[in-house]
Image (cartoon, rainbow, N blue to C red; front, side, top):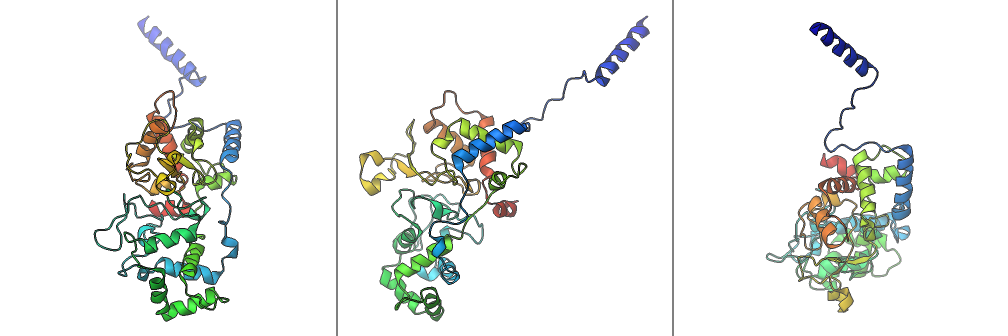
Length: 348
């Protein structure tokens, strides 16, 4: 009788399994299920409406000639634009070694020993799309921005515009290149032409990501977790600040909108305008390539992407419940998908 019961139990169990009566195995820890076709369409439409598509060219690029860009590229790497011939634009905005447009330091050292910048260096990639330059918006465009580090005593340290022109005029290669780039100028080597050329080169530094491939119709360009991160990013209203094709770079916002940020010494745009309403206001950084441009914030106060997400959720988002580790990880996964595809490959 006992053996009959055992046989009956095995038989029933086998029938249940063969008929699909078994429990489905749980997904692995941290895994995210695929979106349905309807969910995918809804997410795509929502993202396109909020962020749009990155333009193929930066503003002003339509007037850039190959000669101007070539000159700008050489000047971008020129250490003779610093007071002691040690520092170029590329020193802090590295596009040759790391190729992510930064030096990944909290603050960047200047050309002269003992000098140090006071704000974290932002990436030069896609910078020409931003509505203003610098964290506090004190430069209206790339050319105006390029003037500042060259003459800044704690950056490249050149004494004057005339000194820059004198150095470049003494190099025969530059004499020829400036003449080709500015054929209609009687005196081609000027400080203004120098920064115009640098800006022209910087307008070529456009990065495209797997997110852009997804926007172009490649549904598998993003993983399920990255799509979930995008959805969470929008659901938590991160788009209040990080919006548009750059996921930022187009507005000012207060650092510490809900709760004060730990650094109360740097008052941001207030230093430029002296307007009380501009205290702790900074240009919202673009999230493109953010995954490889640590540390974060104007003061380099967040060491990792996850740290930055948690901090911003506390001080700038009015959340009813604290952000969860799962939400942080999913958002971080999505932000990583905003990394330039070539840069992403080189980092693997």
